[in-house]
Length: 244
Image (cartoon, rainbow, N blue to C red; front, side, top):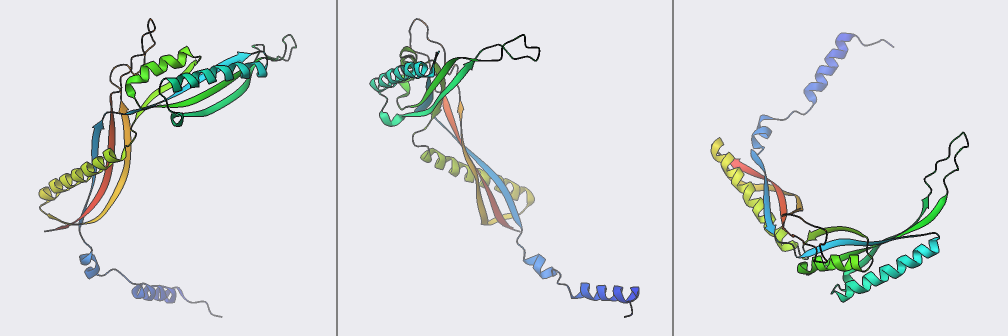
C-alpha cells in the first residue's frame, strides 16, 4: 500500500481545520460584559454564652486507685456546677483517659540502667461546660477549682443564637459589593444592569479580647473575666451585567 506523501497529509489537515467549528463574531458580541465584585460585611455583637473545659487529673500507684479518686472528685465538681446554676444539658463529658506514668530511667545498651517501668497511673476526666449567664463565669471557674478541677481550658465566648447576626452581616456584605461595583462602573463609564450571579463566601466569628480574658484568683475573689465582642463576618461575590 503506498504511503501518503507529506503534501497530501498537509492538505488533509488543512481541510479538517476548515471544517472545525470556530466562534463567530456574533457569538462574541452576544456574550454579556460583566463586573465581578466581592463584598464583606461585619457585625460586632456582645457574646451571650461561654464554653470552657473543666478537667480533673489524678495519679496513684494503681489504675484502680487513680480512677476511684478521679471519679469522686469529678462527681463532686459536677454536682457543684449544677448547684451553681449550670443545667444538665450544658454539661457533657468530652474525654476520659487512663495512662501509665513511666520512670525517668531510660534503657541503654551498656546495661548500666534499668529499662523504663510503670511507676503510677494517671486518669483524666474532662467535662465541657456551657455558661449561659456570663456574669457568673468567674464564680464558675472558682467552683471548678474548689471542687477538685485542676485543668481548665477557655473561656471561649459565643452566641446562643448567631443566625440573626449572621443574616445582618450578609446584608452588609451585599451592600458593600453593590457600593464597590457602583464605584467601578462609574469610573469605567458603564452602567450596572441586572445581577447575573451571587455566591456566598462564608460566615465567620472571631472573638476580640478586651484586656485580660482570664486571671488567677487572688484572696478567693472571683476570677476576672472580660467578654469583649464577637465580630460576625460574611462575604459574597456578585456578578453584574453592564451596559453603556
